Amino acid sequence: MTIVDLIVQEAGRERSRILTAASMAGATSMFVLIGANVVAGAPELLGFLAAGLFALVVAGHYLSAKYVYYRTATVVESALHRIRIRIVDKLEKADIQGIERIGAAEIHDAITENLSVVSHYGPLIAAFLQAALILAFAVLYVAWISLPTFIAISFLLTIGYLTYRERAKELERYLQRLGDARVAFFDLLTDLLKGFKEVKLSQRRGRDICADIERSSGALRGFNLRSGEMNGDNFIFASSNLYALLGVIVIVLPQHIDVDSSALVDIVAAILFLWGPMTVLITGAPAYIRSNVALDRARTLEEKLDKAIQETRIAQDAEDTWRGGFGVIAGRGVEFEYVSDDGDGAFRVGPLDVEIPEGEIVFIVGGNGSGKSTALKVLTGLYPPTGGELRVGGIRVDSSNVAAYREKISAIYSDFHLFAKLYGLLDVDPAAVHRLIEQMGLHQKTSFENEGFTNRNLSTGQRKRLAMIVALLEDRPICVFDEWAADQDPEFRAHFYEELLPTLKQRGKTVIAVTHDDRFFHCADRVITMEYGRIRSVERA
Ligand SMILES: Nc1ncnc2c1ncn2[C@@H]1O[C@H](COP(=O)(O)OP(=O)(O)OP(=O)(O)O)[C@@H](O)[C@H]1O
Image (cartoon, rainbow, N blue to C red; front, side):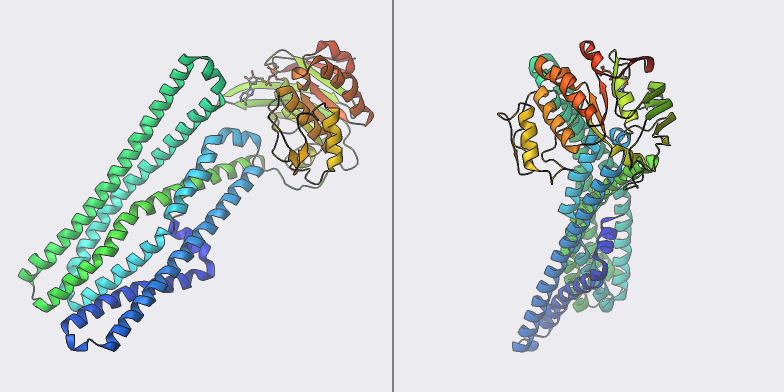
């Protein structure tokens, strides 16, 4: 889709009004030229009426051009708003694996950088459209004065346009590469910022990553320079073409065809008048190309998101299959395999045969990298099994009901996130939040105001306690904790195993917790031990 398609589509019924106003802006420009030419050739026409008409035409031009510019800007911004919302909606619908595959840098780049380019250059399309219309009117005016001159101009303009189009294709390719280089640069910058502490501890590490960033920035500079040069080349080529056109009209043409000198003066005036719109077209063309490439990159992201949504085809707002309770969570030969970037299989969990009865506390234990967190994500429906099946209450969990299954789960994964507001719980009773803040020993550290915690800059253990508050407020039947106690002090660790988990059990919750705390294994109903992605043993406590 080009920027013009976008404007045409978004403008809807306003399309014809914008086009009429643009034609009016173009026509009034031409009337100025014709009027000036006529009056210059017949000074006796000068007078009050001529001045009034001239002022009227100028006012008409001002109003119509302004209308076109403002409406186009509004149309472009509305379209961009819609694209942004659509992308965010697709992001929300896509599944975790799809988003992990695309990567944060590309998503940020499409939504911010690329759409900003369209926002910046899009309204210029109005000026572009007017210039094209003025050009068309001026060429018609030349045709009316002298047909051979019109043919010569059309020929030269066509040659200029075709050459320019070829160059534009090359520029488009460069702009795509520039976009890729920008994403790579953004990735490195994110790495530096996320690893800032580590960089501060090692000057050598800092130098190494900065060297990589410098290389990436160098590549960006190269692509930017080259695309700038191409813009410049195109501009110089097009304006030289215009000079050549003037030369042909004034020097070559009169030698071959019969053009009387007064017509020649009119034609030269028309060509000089063309200069303005031609310049707008020539300088506007890179803006047009940039907007198209930026839109194309945003559309590519949308296609990737569509693919990610299609792959899992998760039915949103599906009916709750487990309305009356969910029963046993059972894995039957469940497998999950990560796919590496080159498409080869990477780490695999399973086949897992496991049963987690409703209302039990189950610990998953095992060495680092044995697949506990991955198994947890499969058992909670975040990763779709690549083999076997997950059954909950005897019902197979698949794309038609996994969204409903996830709604049964409150989870604190090891890489949990605390949102600025209690999204999903915005109607919560503040008194309940304050009570839990107190219970978690955080009342001197944070509070609850304006739908969120007032302070989230806490220690990892304290932040995990905030995440626990959110999980408890959600009050869902399945609670999942990935090494929650690992960052707690001994007092809170004991509180977690000996008070919190039993309370959750008493309230009928099923608890699945990944843990390394063998001192507290007795607090579970069963302990599942994992090794190399498989279950080594299941012991009942
Ligand atoms: N997002 C990912 N993409 C590809 N492979 C992954 C990803 N996350 C984990 N892995 C692979 O899966 C293996 C198991 O990781 P997992 O996090 O499930 O282990 P774990 O038992 O929870 O380990 P730990 O006790 O250290 O938290 C890892 O060795 C890693 O190779």
